[in-house]
Length: 203
Image (tube, rainbow, N blue to C red; front, side, top):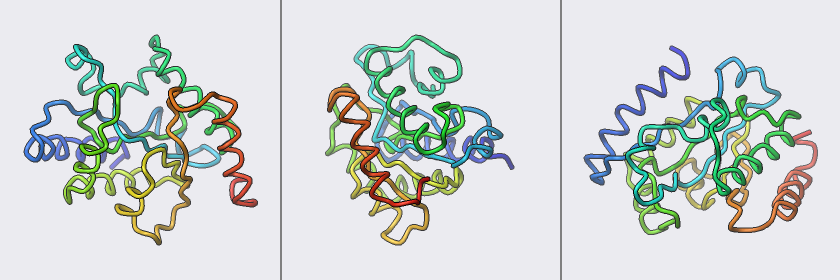
């Protein structure tokens, strides 16, 4: 069974469980940003983990059940300033880790598949990831994607809670790629500093 087939099956179960547990009608699938072949052939299979998809008021029906980042990377749809910053910063990290900025060779996931608003509500996010069933789904998605390295752009305590302290895949604890937090120069410098601190692990 292919990675995408496994994810499709997981998301069907996840979507129903999310509805049952939290009453959330929205579900935002994610996973591979391109083909399985490109992901497998990359220098490193990189998975980027963020907290949730931000849904602006009045746009829910237009975006539900869509993988917004794949639409940008593969379908080349127009981007907002916020989306452009995220894509640009993910591409920088992808280029640093693999030698190629092409995000269609990477994987991406949000923890909260029900989405949020324009500002992260950490109370809701933590309630979601502390739910035993949601945590199992998150772990299962990561297991299916089987990355060589995980760039965790969310609260790192969540990674420890879900994956445990002895998880064998290298995890990079990185800032969220939103432009709200800092400028590109500082963001890139911080990532390079992290990579440098790991010695030759990511050469």
